[in-house]
Length: 365
Image (cartoon, rainbow, N blue to C red; front, side):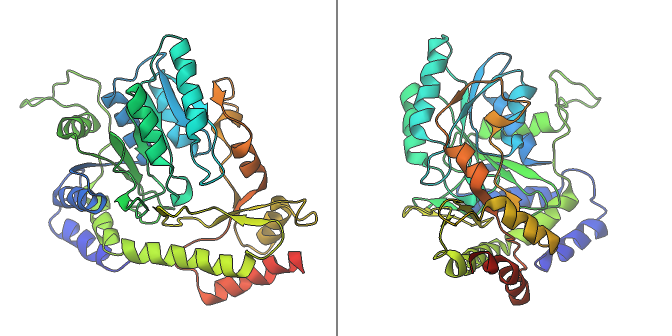
């Protein structure tokens, strides 16, 4: 927490405005839109809810194709199945670990061979690293396919100087407890289409019609953010730049200490990209590192109560999704096999880093 969160939450308590919606929700939405350079934002209960509503806004329904990055958390793909649609997964490229534009076009052509134009493309900015949006958008425009930009991990990241989340027809943010800023749980749908964001807000509030009684003409969802959570978010927005600086400082510290070690490669950052470095992630090649591998390091750190985790297991390898189409090679599979996310919290201290390196560096000595 940054300090002002408690002030805003107390204001919500003092005014007895606890329930969903309220002045903090309105202001938080304005703050998000201003920060991302979009015109509108809908504050929601989660980033998953934002993806679900985005799919609804694009009229995704049963047996439609939706193309999704494979190297991501399951929340990027689950809402596709909520709508009864068919996920088509796409491999990563080595430059950013995000959606491979070449494999994306192969996936689009597959859908067209089935006489269906994909209803949406969902690229993800993995661990805060911007995807190759220029190439992805060029293909989306070529085939006239809307883009839902999953920037759940990338608030504060930019591509060509523009905020991640602002490139797609709709953008998705997350404020889950582990994100770079948090509202404890929460998310947002952002974009420049006033009608779409307004409709999303309506559906997120149980699709209650404008009437003195409770009347519903459409299926709705309980997806709106509470005034209290939005109060936390307002305080968090005031320290977002500081949090990005702290995460990038974490990355720099790891890179200085580890980059010269054999077999170690960090997630690349291209010249036109600025990553919030939400998580510091690297790969370890066992052949180059003389048998040292990701799992040996992870388990050794775990014994010392230092948490690290493998990279996301690609969606096309997940039991629940393995029967769906996949296009690309082995990039995401190799990243999962060899990748590790190191402790990356904004509050890591010098003592924390000394302890991490105490148990990490001896592997190469």
